[in-house]
Amino acid sequence: GEDVEQSLFLSVREGDSSVINCTYTDSSSTYLYWYKQEPGAGLQLLTYIFSNMDMKQDQRLTVLLNKKDKHLSLRIADTQTGDSAIYFCAESMNRDDKIIFGKGTRLHILP
Amino acid sequence: GAVVSQHPSRVICKSGTSVKIECRSLDFQATTMFWYRQFPKQSLMLMATSNEGSKATYEQGVEKDKFLINHASLTLSTLTVTSAHPEDSSFYICSARPAPNEQFFGPGTRLTVL
Image 1 (cartoon, each protein chain N blue to C red):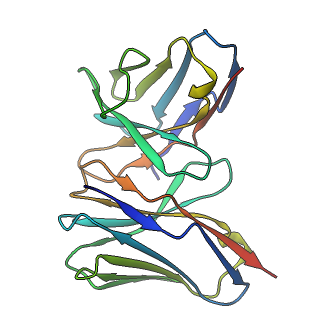
Image 2 (image 1 turned 180 degrees about the horizontal axis):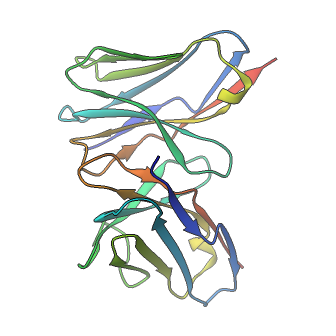
């Protein structure tokens, strides 16, 4: 079945890099996403990666995909206080298909 | 960018009443909208897929008579929680998909049933 797992909590010092990890079970997943949810707000798509890619970089964000191990990670360089949020890993078979979400990782920034 | 709004943002109601939540795509047309439910410290659970002009497709375990979905236009979908009970208290999030691109999410509606 479809399942997306991620750790629930991560604490990082301001200025350090944050790495949020995720594993998924559906080998037919074609798109893998990272969403950000700030308190009381909806989800904001940060980035996505297609399953035939190993890496995608967008400014401070780097996504790494290990398709063999079904492991996805999000690295946030130079973590700022504004990065404090819940980050959801998600997957879908295609861009038009339903999206399956993990439970989210709450990123806490230490001063 | 694409904006999706939800109304109301918060609602408190008495047990047994019905509550309607609206989801609007403000600057694009969406043939498909999705309704999610999010419990505290839990993931988003897809409840149903709403297609304009046709009946919604509900996920397994979601009561269609309890959660009525109407997608009457390309910019509006509504979710009505009928005969609400305290266990229906949750954060409800909609998303809209301007085919064939990604989903854009609304800010969510927090429902509290007393």
